[in-house]
Image 1 (cartoon, rainbow, N blue to C red):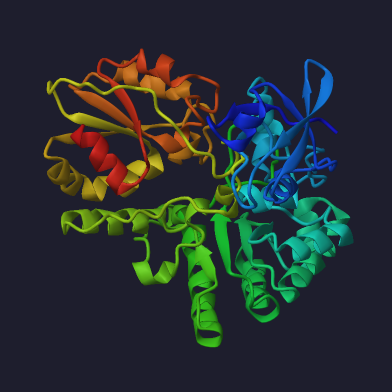
Image 2: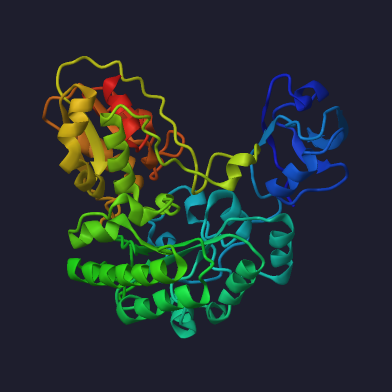
Length: 461
């Protein structure tokens, strides 16, 4: 077991007053070695702690005077202290297999750890889940969890996961639901593998066998130029339209039987099919928003509220991990930052850099955005040459493609804005820095939240 390292000590916190410093390693709390940040938080929530800290290779006990429930005041460098449970599936559609060599090591980590599902919203297949895991999840009420279902037919699921446990591991899903754990599901839809008739069966059995799921997001697979699976093909517009008809028909069934829709199709399916996204009520509480489902409608709704002078009330990332002070800023719900200073002259329109799907969402409302910002605005769609294939979402834009697009832009510009979902900290997926991309632009570059309010506020700066 490795020991987590202290990255930050909050000034005047109990930990700071006890003498804990940045760089110390946490060995134990009250004699217990926590295996992860969940157990750690439960331990440090108690009063009057004895911490065992390792400094320069020497263990020392540190007494902390605090009341129960008062934050200790530490931020650690890791959320899993023992070992991340890695994935033993070999899904042909796994996007990790479609990454080129030479990127950050963390991008190649295939996790299947229920703790990361709880903390960050990562999807787990439950193929490595155990009775011990179930006992802990239930005892500590570690929900909601996020489970990759893909297909309810045992043979199809086994074939898709390329793992014989795919046929039986959904028993854990039933066990979690039976014990009151909230679970969100996901189906990655692959033409020729689990769409069409297989999708019909999956939708029917999700409603009939797993009606207590909170939601199920149905998203199309991403196919990059690095894919070497000959069976993988992206949806055609006709296939996307046909699968949407299936999903919407079963939504109606769920609404009639369960009083809620349960099944939700991704924005990408609507964009590929050339259809408008559904109205607000079709997304209910937008519980799959971070899975690319309802983002366009939430953006349009927020824009309308801005136009009416109402609090924009964005659909923001949520998740249990936000209640865990030691959770680091990485993972599915990682926060993004921008260090760029716009300080722009008014020598041209503001330019919004976005992926091709983002451009399709923004283009119909660009005049409204420009009116709200009280300045001319134009779009600069950025093709994803790095991944190619059907990869067109803004969150997978890389620094190299943005740099090339900025360098080639010959139109006037007073400032460039890009959605912060393309960043983790100040780095893009290809490990390019925001600063280096900004250097290629003829006007300042600013990363803004990927919401209507965030975009308009950025345009007004």
